Length: 410
Ligand SMILES: [Zn+2]
Ligand SMILES: [Zn+2]
Image (tube, helix red, strand yellow):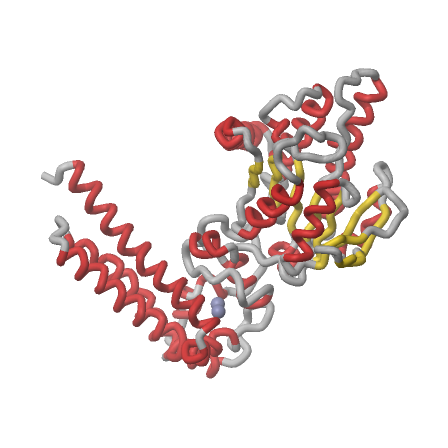
């Protein structure tokens, strides 16, 4: 009879050994992009595919397996054996289970050899992250899938390194690359808008200001004035910027209004119109620009719904309109063809809120850092309850919506 503690230890050893060899694979891949001797082998893998993931040349495809996939599996096997030897040296119970990672690696090695020899169907059955065809899923959050890996080939080769689990990219901040992406931010003349645009510019993105003012905006980066591409738009006339949105990769919805204690009908109308409906119209407009595989993995929406989703903001209409927006985003992202991130932010210091504890630039840094780690809900606040309540609320509401509403049938 196997005791429950043996079962737990055994499972942990098997999973740990598999995780270990995957970690080795990802580190090997990172090194292959920065260390010339390994890069000479790895480069073959990057010569194989067209943007639609069809193979350019069968000969190069076969060679890539001998030069890249096979050595990679060899290194994984070597370190897998090292894992098992270490368990033996420490006389861990059932150390032989630590060989699971080697067995797992041998399946990749066998597949790489089969593809290298051009064995029929080896490619279709074993090379699942490189198959052509329409992307039906979003880039994986915790597991690498085809849309996730496509970006390593054609978005930025200095990001999206992971092969199976996305953990290494999350730790390194390479799970989303902003380099060269056109990122448009609404509420661009506000304190947080300016801080976000600065941070995005410094992350290598092409920052675009979306503002209701007619003035051209610029950034002040350590005394240097950087002019910004500025697009004017008006609440209620969102459709006028459709052509501009087609050229935008990431739309950051950051505009909003706080009527504080006012509860006149006009204040109700204004709060919902700006904080909920105009954002909703921009989301729908932006989603209408998604047509290609590339759009589905490069385009994103980030919505600043604020921590008023789960906490009081001492402003009833601000809370009501922001919660409505937050819930609508939760509903819409059940079928959205692209990643929609929520920014759950606490109050920050600005001319409107001189008592705020956090600075806008500190928040902007954390938002960009969270996005690069591919967090779909980016929480930045000093209130510990938000970190506790928001994930529970989001999980429950999303599943309630999933159960009691229907989306598009594919
Ligand atoms: Zn690849
Ligand atoms: Zn690579």
